[in-house]
Length: 272
Image (cartoon, rainbow, N blue to C red; front, side, top):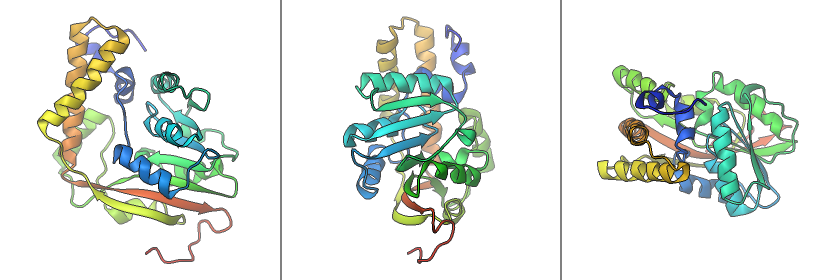
């Protein structure tokens, strides 16, 4: 990454590189509560081996491994995200159990050995979600658990808002119904599901979060460039404001999905 010296430099970064630059704690829908649901309902233990696709700055894998003693590997297409995630692993004293690799998840070599695959909300944003899911199953031997927390919508997001969100995130926000999202996972066994609302945050809550993140960035980077610091705050705030606006339309589901090689993609039990 080139040296960031001006406001223009900050806003020229891709969304993923900006998140890595300020080391935003990039969480799945539900944050820590989602991790708790995954841990409890998918039997993650010291013997578990996790692999996360689109791991960004490492929140999910690092915190699950910290709580359970498990080992983990994160894969991300952003080299800056991988660098930041590995630094976070070192700071948390987890570098001996968790590592992050720069790779295109869609063709990353997989040959079994993992017990859990983590997607969070990321699977929907791959070019071909179903194809990526099929590829990810190669991480397992004969069986395993897929951990996801996908967004879905209860009403259509206005086209004008979609366009605005695309300019902020660099990707199209979720604008599909629950059944359309769940069709991606067809053939996996629904072992646990919790469909949840997303509560909008107040302006003061958004500002507190963004200020805390940028203050940490300043302390960790020994930054003295006020222009860059203010630009980072403004861009992060614009991201959080847009995410907050979308919450009016979105819900999410915390999923633990079971994979059995002898059964997949058939289904022999009712969904609910």
